[in-house]
Length: 601
Image 1 (cartoon, one colour):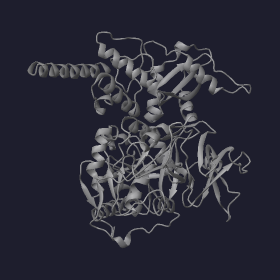
Image 2 (cartoon, helix red, strand yellow; image 1 turned 45 degrees about the vertical axis):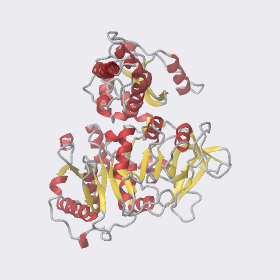
Image 3 (tube, helix red, strand yellow; image 1 turned 135 degrees about the vertical axis):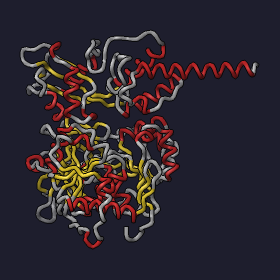
Image 4 (cartoon, one colour; image 1 turned 45 degrees about the horizontal axis):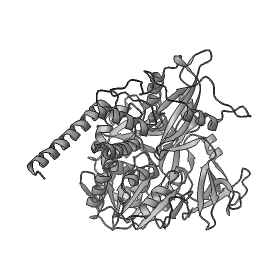
């Protein structure tokens, strides 16, 4: 900030430009307000705001006050946010007028970020000079014990993540896209990857992110040179337009298993100058390995996750922590100096995941146990094989199925629950399989009440899109639930047609051919048999990635391009969307007829 005070630090989605000097002044003002509120070195500060400008100013202000920051999604259930605030020890939470109402019952002090920015900035000499081992931020992921767990990341790990790494060259001429949810760990890469390298951070509007045409225009207008895209979104975007990222210098993608077909589509058209596959959990400051993809065939088994980033070591080990020789499968353990401190207020889970490093050259070294199964390829790169536990990825977010199962089983009408991840037409969804309580029957399980319960207890991306009630679960010879057999049973089982099913009913509206075709199309994408035209797409289990696919299908099959905002509006029923499509088609036909009459053959 002192070297390039007048250089652009941030461009908001609305085009507002903030220089490094302006950002510094705003952040030091917030630091002064936090200090006045009692924040001391090593204290955690919650940041629950809208917009990238507020997020960056809030996070930087917390760091300049000597504390750490905890990004909080105001859309999460209040109980979940309260648990996150409690585990992180955040007594103060920065909010804005949009988010403050969601903290009425949370035991913390709220500080309006706009008011905080009116304080006299602390003098630069008074700014806390953080120790590299000090805590920088805590991000929360799904936990195995029925609640979120906070990953505590140090300043040294952040600096290592974004400086002098081979996967991307970012400097004062770069423009880095900020597209991730603020509570997602990859947002830290976007923010600090730009600001610690003197680059410009460019906010991407969420509506643009889900629409390839609008995204292409936004990237071109803002001159974005580097962008990180979670794999699920990457798949959906390039499926509709494989040339989308041609104008971007470096595109990073990662977060879950990559589809070689989509990667081959990009490389076979007009690819970015560098296409890089990233791998790593939040416990290793977002990423621990990288692989620049230069060649990929649609028939390849996998896209390699590559080799370690500077500061990390990758070990393929068996259950006794012995190296597994290539090409055998083993669990990936990550060592090095930049693993997270552990989980906030969860010593048991920290001890289970962060184990003593038998290969360490100095005492005290630790390995992070990822739970990912990998194998080493002949060229030395690693390839992802699968999971050793019940963790899955949903839209790039890490989800422990056990946490969802625990929430489902809290319902008094449910006995046992098993949650699976299923895939329909390339879209992955969560399915909750439940057994009635002892002595109960299937029709006594209130699926609407269950969904409402889960919506209050879990983030939206963790709420199963489908519920199936079974009398019994298939078991393996050891007496445990046979998940593979259960998954096969689900695929052979028709979706129940009955009122009250989670957003799905047996009623069909046959008054309009367009309505029927839209319902069938949406049902195909969502993997359900019938939809109620009076429901919104969100109520029927829709989500952002499914919406992107539906937009593409509607354009291809019905000739109308829908707006993302219409499909994501919880107050717009499918019947209204069908009516909109019908009107657009009629208008197009009338226009064509008028032209034909004016210019007869």
